[in-house]
Image (cartoon, rainbow, N blue to C red; front, side):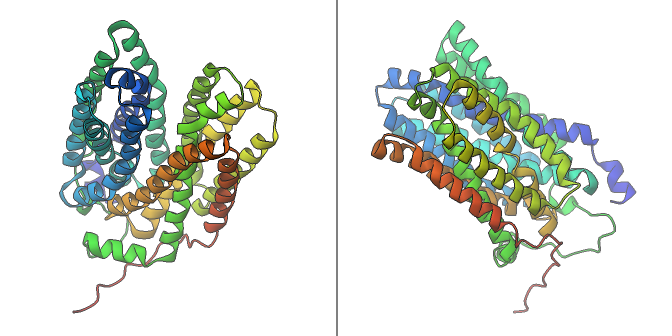
Length: 410
């Protein structure tokens, strides 16, 4: 990176605070909404199935918005996209107590709040971080930003529960909406778009349009394998996050163990994300991803074969936390390594769509499996097989920088 450009960039610590803080605020608000499911059911009388549909739609919509948000960020700048996203999260969260129909909840939770969180989500934040920090620090930077989302999940839940106990659930939701607005100043720090990106010593390369970049990426086998692996990650993460309390209940353990298990996952996810960010700069990223998925397969297999005690459940949660979202830094790093930072937000956004399609299926099929069989055993078996498949899928990935392809003449 040349000296004038380096002097024009904000300090790395400020970039990480802005990106990680934004992810903490938007993800914390979004992930805390599940705490209000019972209150919404009591208030609206719609039934858990109808209310859950809004949450399920939000899972899918969060992923679908990210490539489009990435295209806009690559073109007009991350700052404007982040402002719009934060405002939508706040608006959707504040409107939830006023919605009395399924359609209204889908609008508030699934469209506004989840869509805004997608616009201010990892595709735009990781791309902005990649653009604003030196290449040798990008691995650790992406790990720290990813840990910000985990920190938000860990902190927002007790805040929401405390406000609910004092002032009621509606006030708690509107308070979360106001807290989310604290992310707005970060948009100024992260402003700028992909044309500002430059690599040290790199020759000028023609900026591809979003359509050209997507066509180039989808034509590459390594990128397709990366998307397939991230699909498995989404399946695994959504199943655990949605159904772990149900797993605890089906094992005859106290409900408090389910809450503690989720908290342990969030806590250890911070450790896993930062550790993976450190490892990305030292080992091949595809090998790290294979190791993470293999570790998940072994951990789930050991859990299935073990007696379901409180200690086993908490240890399992800790191991899952270490691998929960530690796939994000090396996945984002491979996208940047393949295609550079110019279209990073767009191309990582497409990878996130694959993740959320897997997430939708993990959450939905978990409920279907339990209703059909009375247990989650078949989901655990599927999880093991998918994790092994993902570990193998990453091995053929070519981890060298791919040369830019010339645009074909008309």
